[in-house]
Each structure stands twice: as structure tokens, then as C-alpha cells.
Length: 490
Ligand code: N01
Image 1 (spheres, rainbow, N blue to C red):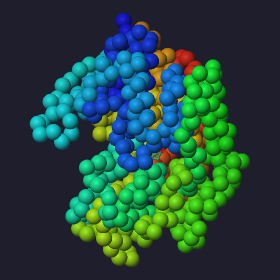
Image 2 (image 1 turned 120 degrees about the vertical axis):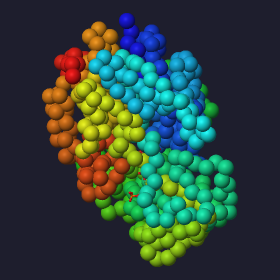
Image 3 (image 1 turned 90 degrees about the horizontal axis):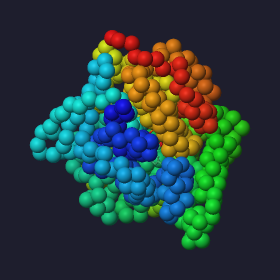
Image 4 (image 1 turned 180 degrees about the horizontal axis):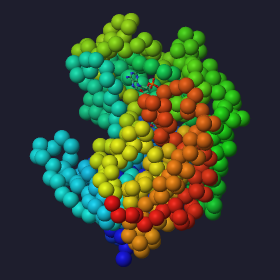
């Protein structure tokens, strides 16, 4: 009999899992989604200018090529439209329970008991709690789903309007306003150009400069779109070329190989060409190796910073007052603060409480940093599989590729789950995986003296995959074999 599967999250990962089950004829699954729509990060991040810096044709499922992309790099509404199209085409929307958050998941020796609450955040009535059992649980809650708000004294005293980039306040018109943007990561780089064009004055607070390389975005002309639609194999060839480019040129830079110097030169040239003022240029020049933090891929960010109504402030923020942002050099009066301050990326699965075999707590197991075999499986947590789990993020290629590899692996585990009952990854396999990962991590640039969302406060890189992605595909394509064992009692 097909196992009863709970999928948590209806973003790119959860939908991919649901579609693969559906296509395999397995209908005994339920997708839990805490929000009232699908899309995950692409539903949440609706700030002006939101989009993806991975080309459209690669930022999509391999099994659902899409001829309708209008641009080389997709904007957020288009990505959300694509996901909606996939959910409808493969008929998985009917299986999503919207507005239902999984609060707790506990393994009872045979099944996962999920405690859910129904009701949207902020609703007047108390959410109702329910419990349901499943044979297997696929957790796909993303790495960037919980906004990080900084702890700056006085934040709650601010008299104006403030919000996080991933919780954009669309009712708040920025026309002519005095705006502060705190943070200069990828989200800030995308939202600053449209905000600068609308605001009266924009104060950009930068703590650490990022390396920025150009984004050669353009709308596809009608002929290109027709060709991509009708010429056999063209879309596949284009997708493959984009994928290989990332592996052949960007990956070696992150592994501190031959292209690191070239990438650095490209970024410095981009800065020189777009920022004529040497004082501003100095502020924007990073002093750490390129790739250590996520490289920003954008061609509109620097020009926005050179506008007359934009200031880049690098003085340390001391506090927020009712009237604005105070730095060591004085107060910047503003009526709006946008916190483009990133996500709580190393707290995988939080705030969900997960307890595995014998009541083991996942948060205790991961106290020194999250880890999972292939980024997918955790010893003592039988029949629990993760999508976009620890060490599966990329700085150089498409996450959708990685998600599909993970779903392949889970699908390969499925017959064993169905035939043998609970299975779990062997502890010695997990230990060998961690050793291998640590060794590979040593040559990567992420440990080279910067702080980033890729690592814990203690400096352990828990988010990124340190190898080339074809290797990850090979590893996840292998039959699960001896890596798993029937789950022992207790
Ligand atoms: O977040 P971030 P993000 N005081 O963590 C600053 C993906 N993404 O939302 O560098 C002052 O990168 C912080 O400063 P510092 C992409 O993978 C993808 O921008 O820590 N500043 C930094 O500047 C990306 O990497 C797309 O010194 C504070 C900023 O806030 C990831 O999402 C588009 C501060 C946070 O930057 C996250 O990007 C957008 C404080 N107390 C995002 N605390 C694509 O195109 C934090 N900061 C695919």
C-alpha cells in the first residue's frame, strides 16, 4: 500500500514533491501550507523589484519547461505565475491545506504525528489545533522563510512606518517620503532602485559592502520566444548552456580556483564603470574574498546609489529613535524604515518542534549546527526527509536543480518505506558524510573571514553545498542501498 505522506510547505520544493508523487500515481499525500497561497519565498518576497538572479529557463523544473518566460531573468510575479501554472497543470492544488501550520511533529515508533493549527496569523479567533498521523514526512520549509530583524535599541519607539523586505507593506505609498533601507544584500540591491525612484530621499545603511557583478537582463523579443517555443531542443540546449556556465566558471571561483581572480576583476570593473565618485566607490569596495558572502548579481543597484536623492551611510547605527536612525555621526530623520536585513537561515525547520525516535529533539541534535545526510536524512528521525535542508544551498547555480535531485532520492527511498516500515539513515553513514563535507568545505571561500547567512554565529557553514552540482546529482541518484536501515525500536 502506498504510504501516507505529509509534505510541509507549498513552495518550489513541496510542490515538486507533490507533483512527483502525483505523477507516480501516489495520491495518499497532503501538503500543509501555513499561508493562504502557494509559492513559499516567492509569495513572501513581493517587494518592488523582486526577482531572481538565476536565468528563467534554468530557474524552473526540468520536467516543466516553460515557453512563456518574458525575460532572461524572471521577476517575482512571473515565478509565482509559473508555480501556479505547475500546481494546476499537475493538479496538486487540491491536495494543499492552506492556512494550516504544522506546529509539532513527533515520531511515535511507527508514524509521524503532526499537530497543526488552522487559522491565519493575526486573525482574531484562536487557531484550532488538530492531530493527524502519517507514515512519512517531507519537510520543505526553505532556508529563507523567517525574516531576521536586527536588535537595534529603540526599534519599537519609531513613530513612522517600518517593515521587513519580505513583509512588504503595499498599502504604504513611498512617493516623496524620507526612507531608510537597512542592509545591502541581494534583496536590498533589488528594491533600492525602484524605492529610490519613488522616495523623496533615501538613506541606505550599509554595514558590509557586497561584491556585485552585472546581471545581463533583457526581455525576450517575439522571435526569440517563438524560437524557444517551437524549435525542437532549443529550450533544453539553452537551459543546459546556462547550467554549464555556472558550473564551469562560477563554481571554481567559490572553490578559490582559477576564476576567482577573473570574477573579482569583473566586479571591480562593474563598480568602476557604474560609480564614478571615488569616495562612494571606496565605501562600496569589499575587503574580503569574492564569493565569501553571496555575490549580488545586479546592474541597477550601483546606478541607484549614485542618484542625487540617495545617501550611502556606513557609520555604525547606534539606535532607532521615534524620528529616525541615529548613527555615530548623528540622526537621519526618516518616516519609513525598510529592514532588508535577511533571514534566520541557520535555524532550519524552526519554529516547528520535531521529535524523532525515543523522543529525541531535533533542535537539540542540531544545537551546534544543522546537518543531514545528503542534506535530506537525519539519524534517529525515521521516514523524515528534508528538501533544501542543511548544506544544499548554492551560490552559483539553480536551487531547483538541487530540489529535483533530493526528490529523486526520496522517490527512490519510497518503496523501502512502503515495504519495510520506518527506515533511517545509519549513524556511521551520517558521520562519514559530515567528515566528507568538512573536508570539501575547507577549500571553499565561505570560511575566509566574513560573516554571512551561510553559517552559524560560531562559523560552521550549515547552508551551502561545497561541491559541484553534477556530483550532488550523482550522489542522490545512487540507490539508497545500505545507507538506510530499518528503524530500531526505542
Ligand atoms: O539578506 P542578506 P537578503 N545592522 O542576509 C544587513 C536570496 N535572494 O534578504 O552583510 C546593519 O544577504 C547585512 O549586513 P552584513 C539570496 O541568496 C535571492 O538581502 O551582515 N545591517 C546585509 O547587508 C540572498 O543572499 C534573490 O554586515 C544589518 C543585509 O542586512 C538571500 O536571499 C533575491 C544588520 C542582509 O543581507 C538573502 O538576501 C533576493 C544590522 N543589525 C534574495 N543585520 C535572487 O535573485 C543585518 N544587516 C535569487
